[in-house]
Length: 452
Image 1 (cartoon, helix red, strand yellow):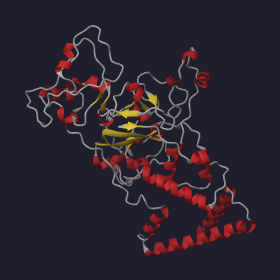
Image 2 (spheres, helix red, strand yellow; image 1 turned 30 degrees about the vertical axis):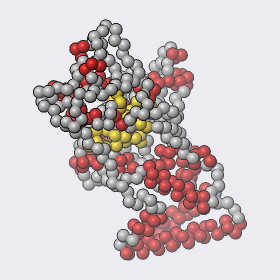
Image 3 (cartoon, helix red, strand yellow; image 1 turned 90 degrees about the horizontal axis):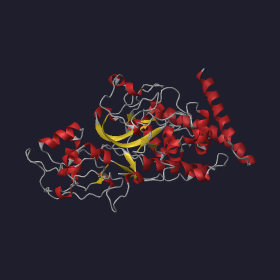
Image 4 (cartoon, one colour; image 1 turned 180 degrees about the vertical axis):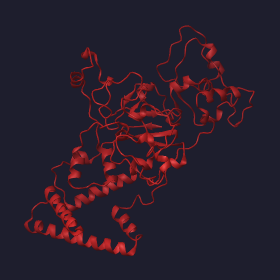
């Protein structure tokens, strides 16, 4: 699987906070946002996958909930600010808009060094030695990629919870992770704010549980690849490729020379290849195995290894006493690092002898014998409907008395809007954001008086 740079959101280039919107322009913008939402989020988001247990699913990490204490305050996009001024405050639309136009501020090395008293010999300190400002400000990052930031509790959420529970948070998409259970509403996610899951509110056991089998790597705080770099989809020019086994992502330039017409779905990173001799051994012929030498050069570029042909592709079972893996550990004096782009049906060729099974079990790779598809949420059948159409459909489902009350309230609001706009139409004066704010303040005042 590969991940390319996200396209720029066109609205941010042409829209300014001071721009004047006509009613037709506003409706057009709203329709475009609805269409983009349907494309980016086509599945239903009213179901949490927690009850499904540890499954292969797309996972999202919430930086807002992971950071203990007050999370870093990021500069808002001017486009988002302008929509806030227009009282467009829908969680769902804000989620799409935020993902489309948000930009991560660059951490300027010189300013950081001057503000950070821990740094010595500041002229030699590189920018990547500090955490990205979305994680922590002006703090040195440890060299070990597996070390999480200070005051940071990593956890991940399913597709439904990323929208229904974290739409206003700083969320990053991690894509597929194996054997992962949604952390939303568990002890792991109870942090600086109240994090009861909106989709499992009645599940008291989930709120007091901890998903102990979940594994968290540097992806959960926004870092990827062996170069351990923070990933920003807006500014990242490089293509990223996901390892089939560990599910981490790697820059194409960090992998090296990638063979032409390569299937990225079956990429295996060099760390996973090195971890288990079975993975390397099923992708070479015995004649191609490296010969013993004291000067073996560790390969820094991609090696397009030909898959060995000694395995019958139609043979899905292997006798327990027959090993078809080429073990090369005893033949070399230095580890060899290979990235592998395997063929489509390579999983069928994995040896099932006792030795190979034990090796894969030791390295937690038994899932390779029976890898399951990634769980996908049910398709939202209403995704092509406008908000108006969805509202009318829901209105027909509610109690008749409540429907009449709602319709009456709508008519009253319509009359208020009409009365508000008439003076502007007569004088041909432009409706400004302050006029809209005053109108809603007056509406709220009326509500308070009527409540009394």
